[in-house]
Image 1 (tube, rainbow, N blue to C red):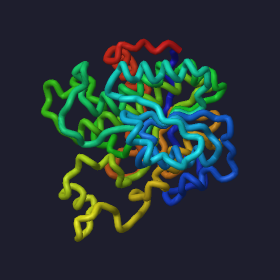
Image 2: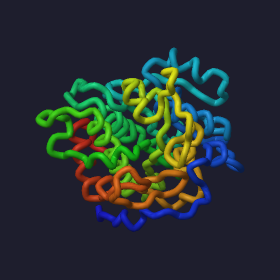
Image 3: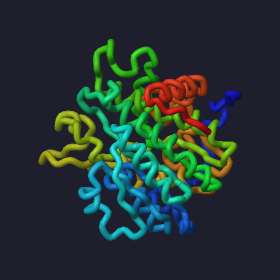
Image 4: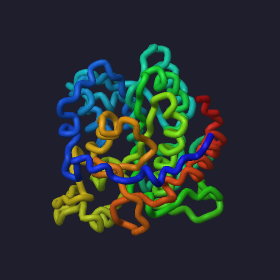
Length: 328
């Protein structure tokens, strides 16, 4: 496969959307009747907002969860939503979920990889893989590989991986991705997994383009959701997400700090909007393709997260770690 220069594609297109745009606004005038979507993490936070928006536009939305019974309460009253069972840290669970979906014979038009963990204590899966890498990247890598026949069958599909500006904190550490020899740092572990999400979109898109399957990665903004469950009150206070009464929540919003509906907007833009027809492999934020930057804590993506050579290297490592040879 010939590597393309993805740096040239990584530039805004003046979409007309921005940081205050909501998921509902992205979908104005769009009818998704007949479209099938899977949203991991679709029962809380950004995933729930995305699932609700897609269903409201007419899509059938499958929401996989570790405990569907608990997820049911969040999804009650949303038409067109189906609950399924999936644990992204369990390879057997991933295969079983994908097999059930493939057995249904349905195509898959939209796959949003929104589930994840952040700043968690050190833990490893059954293969010895560090938990952020296992859940945020490898679980979704295996899921996409197993669902590939349904994505091709759609005759035009999009894969959206939820990344984060945290990727600016760490390139992918190929020498020790599982913190076997270096000291564990929960933020570097999270950041590395978010870099992996962006690199996956680059490599996936190069493979999927010929089959009309395009891939994107997204920074949704800083949003307070259950993803922050491992953060202490002091950490939340430093983020401005804890008030004087000890209550969690932002009191001020800006181009980076958003409501959940605003955070879900770029996920939905990448999932369905015709402005991205013929495009892919790019990192997006604020309802547009992001710029490349080398300045930390500013809008944009670092080159290490959209570098096609590193994307290919990670793809091969992901195949080795999961034991899944991705057959296109």
